[in-house]
Length: 128
Image 1 (cartoon, rainbow, N blue to C red):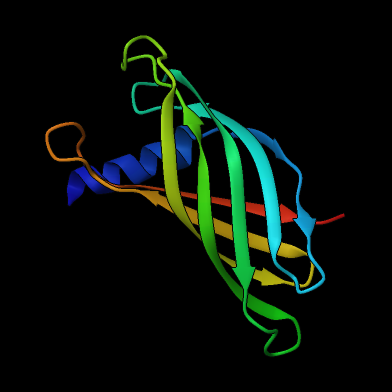
Image 2 (image 1 turned 30 degrees about the vertical axis):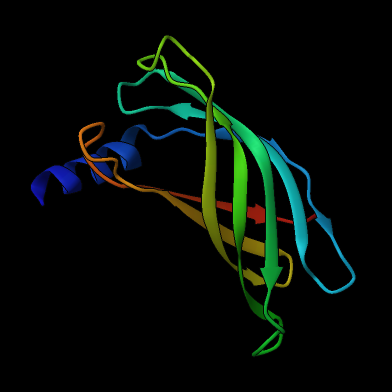
């Protein structure tokens, strides 16, 4: 448990993400989102990730509050995996949207024998 807490503190202190994306909202409120991000991996090396997300949303409750769910498909690369060999990804996405602000998340599950634990990503968006 203490190593998990130490990792959270490291991310809170050292974490730095940069990214860009574009979203298209359909008439029924569902979204298509191409995006690209870059962040430091667990060894403090540059890790790019990019791809396409699709999200479906519930009907608004409490004014404009909505929950969403969908998927992300894309590619990432790590310095410690064949020196940036592109790796395909397919991940679940969940989100909460209130009017023009959204908080989204995904999780990369632990792979026994290859890594130490699950990795959760959270990011936000405001529609100008």
